[in-house]
Amino acid sequence: MNNALLTSLAAVGLLAQQAAAPPVIDITPFKPYGYGLGEGNYVIAPMYSNAPELTAQDGVPKGKVYDFVTKSTDSPLFPGIAKNKPGEVIPYERRVWVYVPSQYVPGKPAPLLVTHDAMGRGELPTILDNMIAAKRLPAMVVVFISSGGGDAQGSERGLEYDTVSGKYAEYIETVILPRVSKDYGVTFSKDPDARATMGCSSGAAAAFSMAWYHPDLYHRVISYSGTYVNQQSPENPATLRGAWEYHATLVPNEKRKPLRVWMHVSENDLRSKDSEETWHNWVMANDRLAKAFKAKKYPYQFVFSKESGHCDGRVTRQTMAQALEFAWKGYKDRGR
Image 1: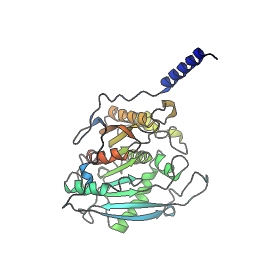
Image 2: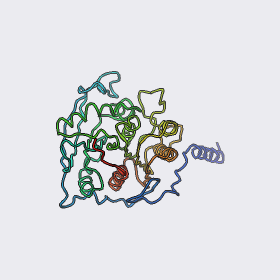
Image 3: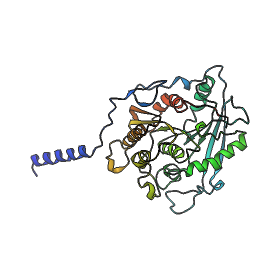
Image 4: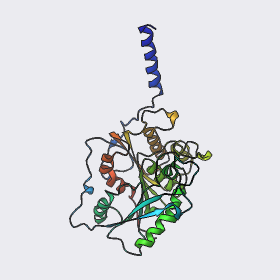
């Protein structure tokens, strides 16, 4: 084979790769991200730095953090699975941490934030101490809940987080929250407007699923590097492409729900060069979900972070306080 033919074949291969590559998100209309902004699309870029709310301040009351372990045998909803032992019940334990602000009044229904993979356990207590004291956020209780273990299809974590249903919300409602109430004397608000969920990656998909399938329980969502892709296992004929269906069919086709969403994706998030046919491009999925929210007139913020990766800690430490402030905007204590 001569050099000219090799060159020609290489050029054809390059063109084929370029044709298969997904379109780059057009962030030209995106505005610079900062404090006190309204709905819409925003962009941030290095150098990233920790938000001032992450620094403990003198004279600010400090909340308390408790922890406990729950077992899979506590509920029949998720008895336990593992990739290396398909078809078997594999018992597990999960650890849960609880933040109770110093301003909590026993017996009064408290606003609630549930975070998956115990996201924010290191940062949120300080952030909330500062923001609650400054009256920028309500005096919420936070439940940081770890997964049942493993990752992706065939794992307990994958089953809990990537299943497009309300089952995980029901598990938290019937197993985790009653335990917190009993052990730490916390009364949770039943008002869905006083309840929020948060996560990163599949934890973000779980957070959104909780609110999507149970708007009777949760109205507010914070999503970092959300796994709105085809990770669901086992398959469900109603949502054949798993969480990809959120932006492809569910949000566009269903009546708008009373949800308020803050969401993020990184420039170099997972499989950012994949073609659409894979249903596994995190950047494409989050961009399309933001567009679906805009089309249906959901209150949302979408933040695109340049030169960053999946669940990038630099991004979360810079934006988490702002995300919380947006997610809780408009909250009114209705005493229930």
